[in-house]
Amino acid sequence: MEIPPNKSGPSLAALHRAIAALSTDVIAVQEIDFNLPRSGGVNQITEVASAMGAKDWAFAPSIIGTPGEKWRKLSGGDAKLINNNSSEVLTGSYGIGIASKIKVLKWHRLELGNSPIGMPLVVPTESETSSRPKLRAIYVHDEPRLALAATLENGFTIVNTHLSFVPGVNFAQLKRLKKWALQIGSETDTKVLLMGDLNLPKSLPVALSKWRSLITQNTYPSWGAKVQFDYILSNELTPDEYQISKYSTTVISDHLPIGIDLLIS
Image (cartoon, rainbow, N blue to C red; front, side):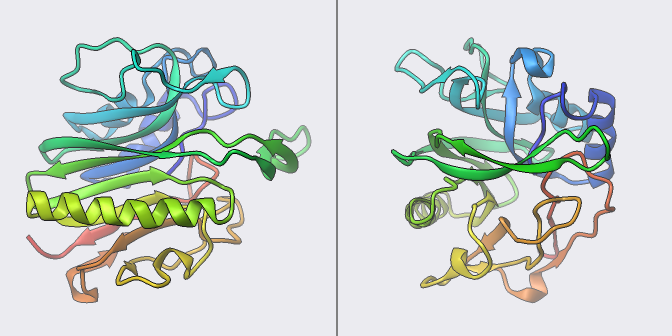
């Protein structure tokens, strides 16, 4: 799920209500802000963690600054990860995050790079005549991409990502990410769930691999979903080991939330 900035999105109270309504033990979010003026200078993943009652959380910045405005890539002196045990200082930034009620044993980060070229994208903008956003095409430069993983006490590793929107680049990033995820799973003796906004339509995320998409559902845009960009992938879980979570249609994002309930210990 992607969290919008406050100025064009919901209030923090609405965010807390929406997250609490999901009633989940672990959540992976993309497009979140950390100490940016446009979202009131808050760390959005801590708000998500507070709303769901999670003690463990982490934010992994992809850029310093505000996407679509002024930003730069991370330098050697920038913190690559901030979590509930961090003492590091990080300036206003944008990236992805995970919050968990289940104890996190270890955090992991993988750099995935970005496309050297951008492309026109259809993006939502506020409408003066309708409660539904308007869609318009703008040229967008691709920002650096990454993955954030949490190895949990319950024997699972959760991998969160937001891949490039440039065709071909995103598929190559996912191929590399799958290999990295399996390596972590092997090193930690955990089952891996890979999730997030993959910016790939149906069937492509599992093509030419042993991975399965646990959910087949259009997720974008949230007010009339026409395409699936958001996935939960597994190379181990069988259909009798999980069930698809049912969420209400009330959302705070331009992507619909997806989730599963595990039926195994």
